[in-house]
Image 1 (tube, rainbow over the protein chains, first blue to last red):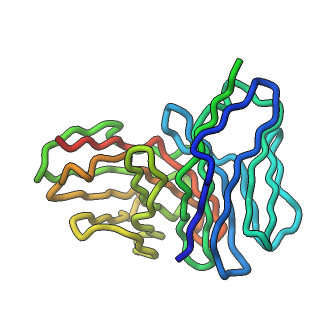
Image 2 (cartoon, chains in turn red, yellow; image 1 turned 120 degrees about the horizontal axis):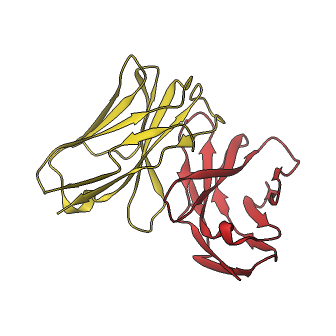
Length: 114
Length: 114
């Protein structure tokens, strides 16, 4: 079964520091898509970053970047210069090729300390 | 604001009852997805519609049904409600609903079954 694992239920980071959230997934596919979503206390799901498996270059969006290791089936999210507004649940999601649905991990709660 | 709207925001009902959740996709999006998020869990995919037709199905209970109307809004019907159906129900939309198509999530409907 295709699964997504986020092994860190909770992480803390000091404001302005850098933090990395881990995500691994299980698949036998070669083409797929990966996403990180942020869920703040408002519960709204907000897209943070998106990665196509066929692209070797790691995606970046401002202070957010990923470390995509295809062979290791790892997709970690790095948040640089952490801000108080980054405090949220972060979900990793995997979209198997041809399925049109996302498989979500259980999430990592990020706390940002002032 | 993702452009996806969901009504109502909150719904409180009793076991055995039936409710309807409504979703309006972003302007121009043809595909709608429904997800269920139980307390402190990841999102579980329920069902996807594309331009009025069912395209993909996840772990959706037989007591649940959905449809997408000609104006592209969608409704999720939940019947014979049980306590375990209490959850946050998200609707997402995407342009064409193909793999890799980014899904934009609505704010969710919180359902409480007493």
